Amino acid sequence: MQKQISNLDKLTLSNDFLFKHVMLRKRICKHILEELLHTEIADITYLEAEQTIDVYPDSHGIRLDVRIADAANTHYNLEMQVKNPVNRATGKFLLPKRTRYYQAMLDTDMLQKGQDYDELSPTYIIFFCLFDFFQDSQRIYTFKKRCLENMNIELADEAVIMFLNTLGTKGDVSPDIQSLFDYINSNTITSNFTREVADTIVEIKNDKKVRDAYMTYEMRMKDLRDEAHAEGKAEGLAEGKAEGLAEGKAEGLAEGKAEGLAEGKAKEKTATAKRLLSMGLSVEDIAKATSLSVEQVEAINAE
Figure (tube, rainbow, N blue to C red):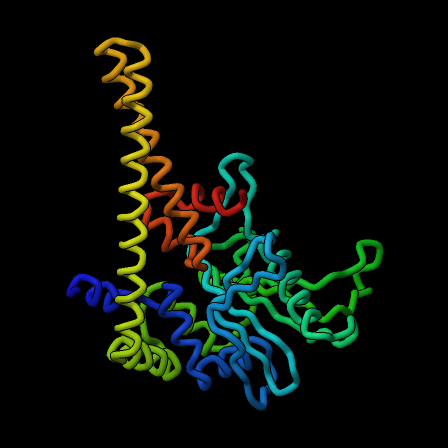
């Protein structure tokens, strides 16, 4: 139990669990949005933190870290992205199409509530990235749809996607946003705002409900790993014995057992990853829990 508590103490703002809880502090989250968008926001309302949207029973659900609406009914989805996921089979990076899918699911979720197309709320999908996806050193990459034949013509669908590059050196951001980037990168406090964020993190980590929630989360992951390990080991042994006995030789039995155990371990990890994905856990946490690479988990998620 002590190990799980110390794990929480070691978390930084780049961790999904802690990022979500910090963004649930209205003053901090509202200030970040105002600084990013250079506008005053009257108020924000939290929809569902870490919400999983399954629009159809057989669709691929998405887990949202923090989903917010402001007083003007603009919707915001804030995500922390530590690593740059890639499909190992194709070599393609997954982040661009992930934003496309997030946007589609957000819109479809709103339409399911009875809205017409023209009632769709303006949306901002905002990724805090600890890497420079576009390799242009911009601090912020903002995307809207424009006509290729005349870039002055914008498709006014009111859907915006922003990638915040915490390592960026180009483009202007407010001092508080830059200090936030510095804090995410190195845990260094350089402003009153990041002092507030740091103090909030200490407060969150000392909150008994948060500690209990994190311990429950850790234990749930351990139980799933243990369950999958037992199932995978039994399956691997059975397959290994069957293959070895079929050959009728001691050598075949030994090789069959070894191969069966290896396949069992691989199946065990895959089974664990699938279970954790269905629970809405982040790819990074699943990779840690299963000893798979982030790329392997992303490939499983893409199946």
